Image 1 (cartoon, one colour):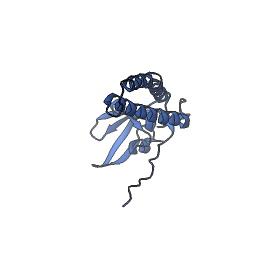
Image 2: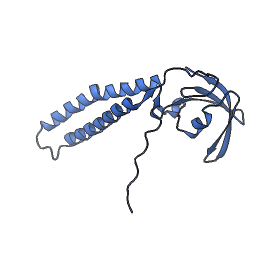
Image 3: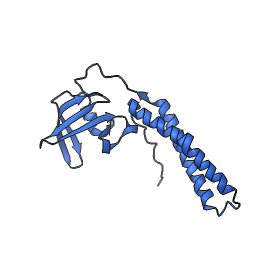
Image 4: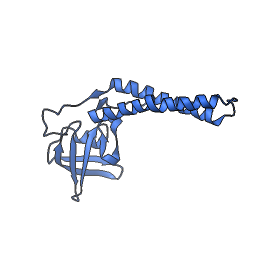
Amino acid sequence: MSRYRPPRSAGTPLITPEGEARLRAELHELWHVRRPQVTQSVSEAAAQGDRSENAEYTYGKKMLREIDSRVRFLSKRLESLKVVSSRPSDADKVYFGAWVTLEDEDGNQSRYRIVGPDELELKLNLISIDSPLARALIGKTLDAEVRVPTPAGEKTWYVSAIDYP
């Protein structure tokens, strides 16, 4: 049996200006702050002599590989992303970047913002445009009914507010 798995798709290449700023800040932090620190510690560890049994050297080299990998990923991803900074022509419908307030059948309200897959942060109520809920919301208007299949069964929400920052 083969262990081959096809490459995972990168998701929708859209991002908000805030998300792009966060990715650029992470790239800057990695390249201009963390990498020089780790490089310095690796060179200090290498100066101690025998590298084969030097844990600081081995760990530092591993950290450098991880930093370089993330820098490569962020550089390529930022090149391919499209920043969506303008509001849609029809602000009465749900599109990318919208804050949507939903009400379930029990009257509980929740508010989500539809963002790109690189900005996904459930603690901040940021959901990916590739998620089932966001796909169901796109194009809906105020008071629209949205049905989304969940692992616990189909769930229904009603759109109670749409805001664009």
